[in-house]
Image (tube, rainbow, N blue to C red; front, side, top):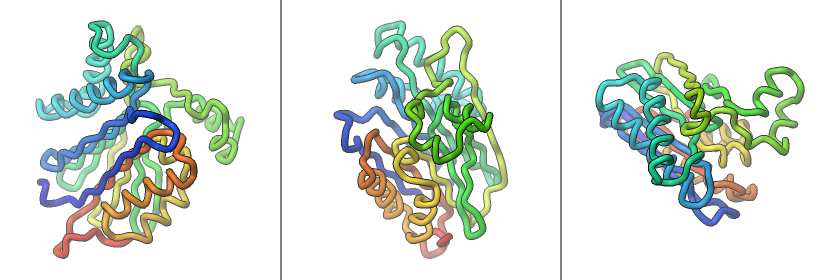
Length: 245
């Protein structure tokens, strides 16, 4: 299956933080890609995001659904913290894309995102599990307010958090078209770069690795206040380039 996909990815600590708590993985042979954004401070967030990624891959390899995989990752992070690997209370947001034949499925917890772009449209496929998203849903603020809201980093669901209640996993699925390009990213990108700017960068570049690098640079140019990770997935063509959207 790995010969079906073109992939580009990049991660950066940003311009402010002194370490990177993001993790990601590309398992094209499984049709599986993951981005996780750790929380919990030095030597904790990166532990939570690493466990999250590893557990999801292991569960998918065992034939489990994405929803089951994320629930198992949640339990694994909680157990690790209690056992002294990292710290209790550490957590991670996560987004997962899986493509099987002509179907895609996305699962997520928190405010990392997945977008889909092609010639006709560019759309966000995930809905943030965040305080600001709740304000948006209730028409208490608009999108411009959301981008500068002082509590825009507050999530209400994360892998490893809410240990007494488990964790809410959202999923969405659809048909994978050959012209589709998927973007998985941590909020270090979307906090700095607008959806319109992201779409323009996608439109201006064909090679997915070059596109990933440009997205990272755009976030850094805007201040790079957080770690930033981007992962792009599209179809391979005879000339081994993606179809320009």
